[in-house]
Image (cartoon, rainbow, N blue to C red):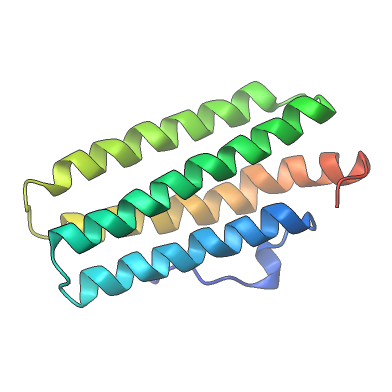
Length: 135
């Protein structure tokens, strides 16, 4: 699977969120590079930890916007975030097993999840928040 690349089609029209999405995609590229260049388990884990920490901070920003503007699908969206975090950390724990292909499996999961989450779930809240004056 190709790593997700930022394109204008992923833009939500909410500057802060779009910048965070761009950074998440950039960090996935860094993870891809660490894996493909065989930088070792420690290097991959460092990039992954940074990516997960950034994702959690990003989710907190989205969720604050939801609360502030009373987004009606807030609970469902937050549940998606929680499921992502749980699955991502389960992958991270399995990385220590040195199972061949696991890092690429993780990268495929991240790429697929981020793309689908932005395209489907985030675009639903984007219109609502823009209608509330968020830009």
